Image 1: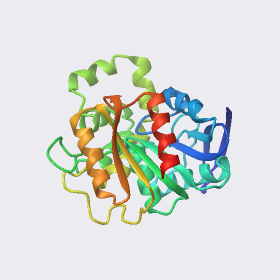
Image 2: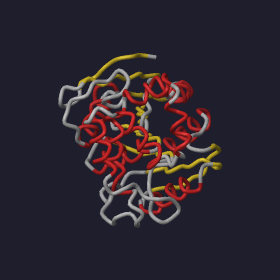
Image 3: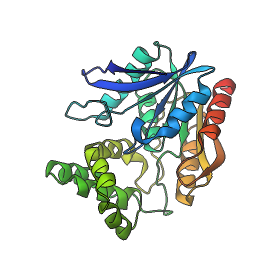
Image 4: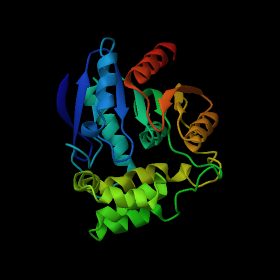
Length: 272
């Protein structure tokens, strides 16, 4: 295992951890997550390190990575490209994305990032009435709350509008200073994910041009016991992508076990 930092195109330092050697696999976290809060990524990486170079990194504005305003989704594409180039040896990588990290991976592939394959676990979409879409002004409200010095309100909006947590659950979370402070610290980045998912979470079918330049092998997964609307999202994205394979894997809610993930990624890389 090796810890390090790379420099993105705008000079932002991005912190990463790498395991093993071989063809690179890069793992992208979803909203609010980063290396210190997602130990399952390290566990999966350790299982894959016998054959692959597996890299996890803190997305900009989280954990040990820096940030450079103003934000644009293209900067995160640059971050991923820099991770692949500087930590992955410059070889096109298999990129795996959790949740909205999967949307980021698709958007980066659409923009031409050096990706050889995409694996996605429960990427975000709302294409029908199985759940409410994101509010049309979701990103703007997040940005306004952070700019006004109210990061907790941004977190609460994410929890209620995106996660669909009940108000009383969010109120209870706010009573835990340690948990809530950690979420407030990365509150500005919630709008980053909002920008990456906004075209897919309108409640309407996915636009025809969305990801139309992504011709890579793609694996789209959801957990067997996840919430129904997340399974609907995964299926809709798989059906939208001509090169995608859809697979249901053992899992509960919005995650799956490291050994299940590692086995799925290993098989996908060898099959694709």
